[in-house]
Length: 251
Ligand SMILES: [Zn+2]
Image (cartoon, rainbow, N blue to C red; front, side, top):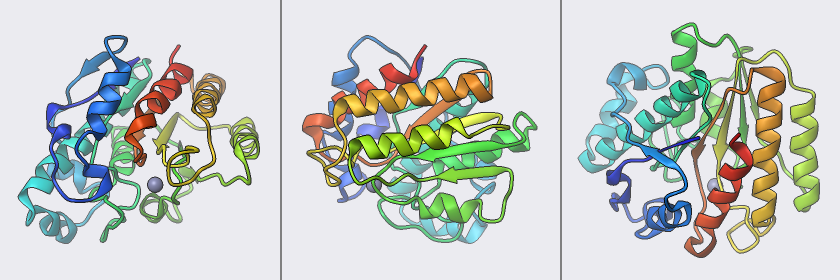
C-alpha cells in the first residue's frame, strides 16, 4: 500500500476549508511511519487536457499558486492509478480535491478533476477499458459525473443513506452487482463523519468501506484499486478516518 504525498500539499493556497492549515498535517500524523510515502510529479498539460479544454486550464493558470499545487494534486492521482495498475493499492493524499471540477468549470474547492484525469489516462494508455468510480464523499461529484456523462466505459456511483448501516449496505449492494470493470477508483471524502459536516459515519464505517473496496476489486479486476482524497474538514478526526479506510483497503 503506497501513500502518494507531496510536501507542497501542506501549503495554504486559498482560504477554503480544503486548503486549511493543519489538514494535511493531521492525516500525515495519523498515518505515522506505517505506510510508504512516495512523491508525485506534476501532471502535464496533456494529462489535464484529457478532461479539461485549454480555456479552463488557462483560467486556473492565472492563479499561479493554485495551478502549481493543482497539477501536483492531479499528478498524485495519476501516480496512484499507475501504482494500482501495477498491482499495489494506493491512496492519493492530495489537495486540492477534484470531484467538483467539470471539464469547463469548477467550484467547491476543486480546480482539476484528479480522479477523472487518472481514469482517462489509464484508458488512453489502453490499460483499462472500463472503470468504476465510487465516490463516498458527502457531496455529489458533479464534476466527475459531467466528465463521463454518456460514456458507457465509466460507472460513477455516489451512495446516499439514512444512517451509517444503510449507507454501507448501499455500497455493498452496488459493489456486489458490479462486474466487467478493469479498475476500481475511489473518491474518498471524509466529510460524512459523525463530527464532520455530514454527521453520518463512524471511523469504523470507513474501515468497512475500505474492506468492501478491496473485496470488490479482487472480485472484478484482480485487486486493482486506488483512492484519492476529496473532502473531510474536522482535523480532530480526519487523520483517524483516513487511516481506518486505508487499513481496510490494503492487503
Ligand atoms: Zn464533500
